[in-house]
Image (cartoon, rainbow, N blue to C red; front, side):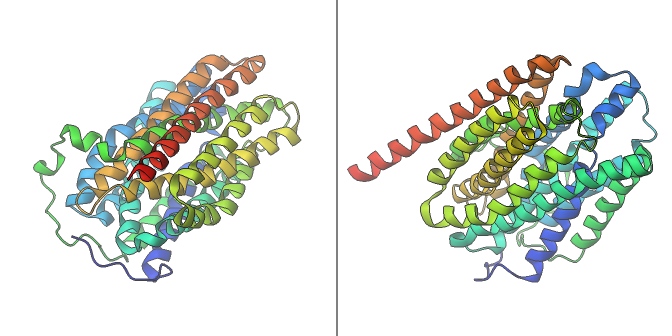
Length: 395
């Protein structure tokens, strides 16, 4: 179905993909630190949880379609559509300046991450040998991570130095550059179909691939914390006196970048599950530190631990998902994992905003609950590891 993967991973196609992903990640992440205060200025402070929640809701809903189209129409068109949504939305934010239209646009903007990462993960799986899959996911994650760090920090500076509208237009520019790069990439899906109504007919198996239940379930539980961080870290930053609301994101992403390559490569040698156990353990620690941070030092320390945990879990869970898929259901399998991811982020965002209720004294409770979700992921993974070891000894 796909072209045979070359033995190396540092090809032109791979680095083009990484550059496109960096620009795409920068495009939508640069908005995140400034949107809570932007929405509050409109009079929608009570809807802060919807900023991330609606975004991930649409991303999750679109995953079955993006997975199906990835397996039928091609990887590159699906990636290009995701970047195109970011490009268009950047121009619409300055037009939608009241609460409900703004929230509607956040809903539409979510289509971007519903499509681009699905096609990207399938493309990587097509061109990378199975025994280096974790390493490749780690390296590509570094490209996304640099965008996630660069975007929020630069976005806040653009907004403060120029205007919020300048930030929106810059977001569109980055998305446009991501699309241009994709035009120079060779499609890896050989048996392609023409785009038709039939391609959009979804079955239950398109919504969730049972073969990847374990990594999808761990992803769901682990990413509640991400939803809380994305929603509350800007308010937390203001409470601690940090003018640049992107600092937490920058620190978190920098540490995530530093660990991704090592984590992915280690999972290729030691296995996905043991490395996942380490990531979940560190995630629990990060939630506890962040929740009880009463100084900038502790807040940044929590961001560092959170970055390490996500830097471990992101490439390893992606590689684990691809390991359990095959050529014919790869897009669907990856989409299932991302549906779980977005469900975790979205529910984490809504839940954390509701518990926070714009009261600083509620922050410890919020992050302890997020730590509990991470603990559930850890317990499940440990039990799965023990079960698999027991079965392997019997066999």
